[in-house]
Image (cartoon, rainbow, N blue to C red; front, top):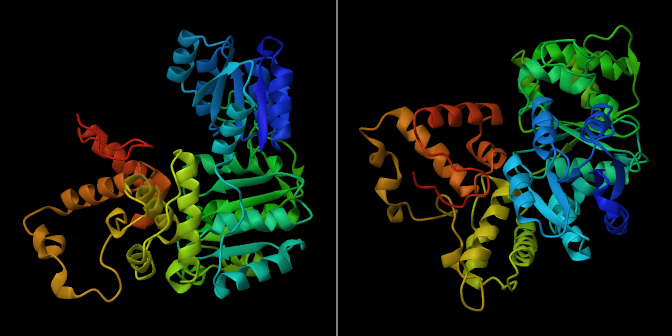
Length: 447
């Protein structure tokens, strides 16, 4: 966890920093908004920024958005200044922390940003074999391709490799190739000089330079445009990059990991992915099996998520009933571990009594071996006759988004489309007057 503190915080910065450090965070501090932005532009990235409300929180957050620097921002201030807190939240801050800081509050914020430990919960021999191979190659310099269906934990495995490598003391930087527009990807990877293009208000280092000495994860590499694949290949081969607008190459020392939920051999055969780049990335391949192919992982993961979300909601972690256990192990899990996590999150919130029963387990579709006669015809194509494809698609997308509590990335993975396609669809729906769930919502809002 890398924490950037912006402002002097009225002399309370020392206490806040020490609390964060005691919780395992690495802390850096600057006095002004511009200095904070310059720190981030120069590749000294952070997982969280804490900013004094006496500074212009809105300008800082707007600058982050304009320069495509993605990170949560927490505002801080002396005492319980309600007006300052409201203004900071309206400006886009995720939370307001009154100072002097509370140890528990600082810990809770850091935990929420870190979201969870990167420990890999498993009990199935197939997953144990994946981890055995990951342990074996972690200390090498070889590039690794992590493949597997969406939601199986490819990024988690990548972080695991970094944590076991000789580079673990340096940064792990992830780039979601599916989430960044093609026109911005080159700048995101290689950086740019001030004035290199419209909107380049200052020099900014790219992800390669941010990860220098550490590990760079290229998530969903199959989504990268072919013209950028040639530049990526050169960067890997020559161990140097060219910033946009720069006049000399910049040496970099980065270990590359890549993930894909597609069959890369098929992508190469179709001409969508360069064969030479694929061979360069696929020195080692770690194939993560779908959750249905490692059934022994289902119960232990379910228990893990029950504990996680019970703690997060200050609730008792209830045991699974035999019937609920059977439902979970008998289901296909098309969304894999990510879908199981969402299912158990809902189950924790919906359960009553002394255990989590089948009534709290909401699954999409029928379990394996379900009697076809028991399926309601209205849930199949018979109920769709007379409706347009666009109407059905819209309802499916919005219902899936609700199922994922507004999480765009999770919904895109379940739907089998790119995050870019999903965002374009949601933009169309908003412009047409349809209500789209926002992140964090559990049900469709009313107009």
